[in-house]
Length: 253
View (cartoon, rainbow, N blue to C red):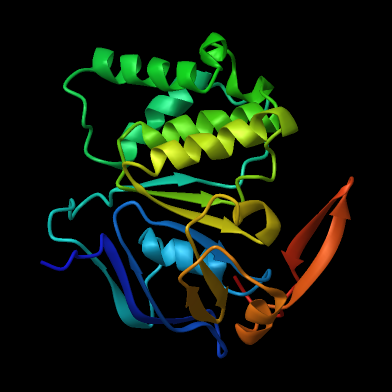
């Protein structure tokens, strides 16, 4: 029997004003997919993520979830772009992680089990010693690891990461992406980025979003591919390493 997708974004169109931000976007996300969502700033990547998460509704089309997935709480873990929290905000690291279970029906039978799972995740990320620290005191890289723990605490079927490399320190970057590869053994991952060169070493397939969505059944993209998909590119130098990034596209995201 043919496998059914976890999520089907079915011919979705969205507009903030007159011009469409997304137009007739169709994408199926299957179990253990690892999809790189690339595209220029303003091309619609963030809007697509908001639609998948149910934060906004499309003008046309619909997002379908597989029948065995929870109807009331979407089985999605989300890692936002991470900077830092207000240093005065009174929340500890472990409480940030535990707050992720509030986004879905609590899968834990007791608060102690929830706490145990939070501690386990923090330990796996190498920051268990920070569990009682005020979250606002953490660096951007440390905070990103905390938010990844938060995204994972409810055992999602789909993990969405928004520009995860932005605040990852160099020492942790390789470990971070290797961890994502391990997580991909039990969940689908959507990784949103404008840095093509970084993510193509880890993702399995690529979707270029620039109002329309072009799906590439491989992680290998040539400049000709990107131009054909209407994704303008620019190569920049970051230290000694060149990165292929996507140029800005006028519009809303």
